[in-house]
Length: 158
Length: 395
Image 1 (cartoon, chains in turn orange, red):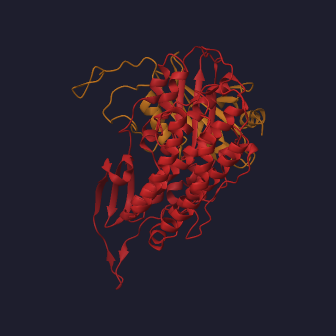
Image 2 (cartoon, one colour):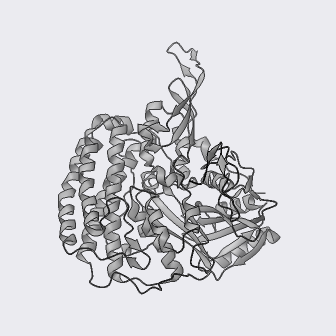
Image 3 (cartoon, rainbow over the protein chains, first blue to last red):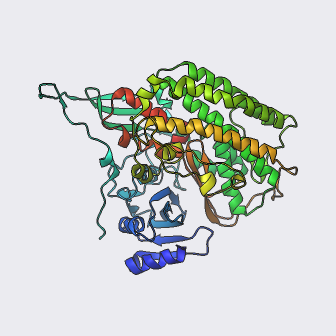
């Protein structure tokens, strides 16, 4: 399926949950509503025409304009096609729905996005920090992150 | 609303209560044991929190991040794109060349540059040599996990010969910084081709010797067959890749299925697990896939060396690399699986965002699902068969 066909089938099914799309990019992407990612993901995985059964990558991004986002790179082992999904949220309301129940691999990736960007993954089964210590403050990959002076009494910049 | 399918964690067999011969149920208390962070068989600083009932594992909770060194933050704070390459080396320090390959591929796809053919062939030779070196560490240390010390020494002896080849080429033995954007740091030395061919001739019988010593050893087979079975659908749902995925019987290799470099011009076949000793997707299958992949790599190296064209080793690229604003996700097949780099450019001279999709990180996340219901002693083998490198898990 081409990106355009995928977009059309998503639009027919979910209507206004599909926010925008850029199909002329080298790797076409579709922006979806951050509070409906799970049902869209289930549809993309289970629909016989799309069958995105393999999530290659899930990345958090800080776009440096007050917007955070998660980018899902999907691949279908059955049809051998790819699509990129994006879900955006604001820094004030950093909430995106979890897709862990669709692709189990998203579990750790989403924890990483929470850890690094402070994106709260709604309905995640186990939302804890993953790479940083559990008592670390702040989310380091945000563009406006300031390195703290001290961590538990230890000087941080060496 | 679409109906939800069952979660893959339910595939793993849950341990039932142990029964005595007279039919009474034995029930012991659950206990929590820490394996690591400083444990020889976690292959680095990984902590596994194990909930056990007697000797049976109820749950495993991996705690990672002990080796976190902010690779992604560093990448955003370099002064140009080339400076990220040495940091990529340090992701997977057992297979540095493959890490570089993935990153430079991502940047080259953003720049849309064509590489001289000689570069691609040398890259394939180097990547495959590195794959053998990395698999030798994997199977060698895996032997130690199973209690066999000698194969480890055989493996490290042969790996040393590959490191000598790398040292001859770029001076470094572990972290190379050899693949540059648009080419290589410099050409291979004149005697390299002969030495590499000699290595191939020498190493092929050694694989058979290694197999006789370890792979088909009866004790080893009994320890590994039918242990830690990873079914196909679980492997896909957890997006496992590399020998993990192929060990589960899925015929999938990015070198063939999402081609890059010149792999499509060479004759070779991916190796998959067939369940020869037990069940498809068990620990032994993942081991044999690595062993057979080394033979495949040898054949790829020989073909690439035979077809090695003359020419330049650096494409003409601007001194200051500024890709157009945009993004790309490029992936390659490293010894551990699919290593992807998601690079976003905002049109400036430094990357706006670099995300490394590390195969070791993703493969490790399946560990709890496949080790529930196993014995503690088997967990060491299962963790060893995932072949993690903590530098890549923690980034």
